[in-house]
Length: 122
Image 1 (cartoon, rainbow, N blue to C red):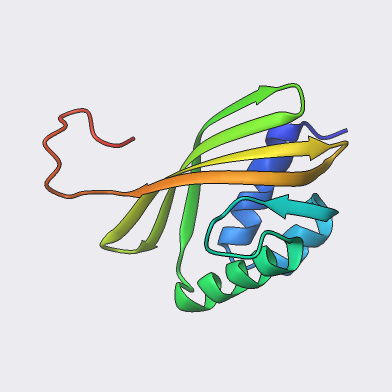
Image 2 (image 1 turned 90 degrees about the horizontal axis):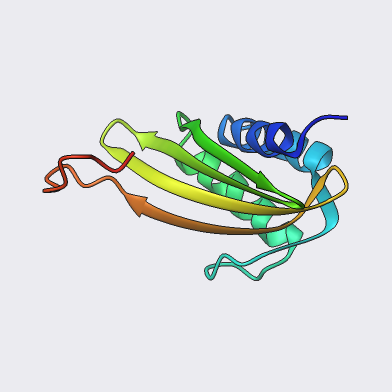
């Protein structure tokens, strides 16, 4: 059995590299729900949003930086590079049912080039 941390990280890596349909087929539960305020909240709306984002940013890359697991929850802090000058810090929280992601939340913020914080965003 694959660990939930592995499944969550692999899902995000696949989805970010354009293998969205495959990632959903392998790792996302048919009754998946999400809490992104910009989309309806069901599996299909999230799938379509990810496909559209992939079309808009075909050279997007993703790097998982920190992964935490607690019972049926996995949290991943990652770096998303949409374009050379467009980086984001994203925290995904996934709830699992068995080996499938059944629910997700996310929080993100854009990297600010002139940030006064000497520690950086990552």
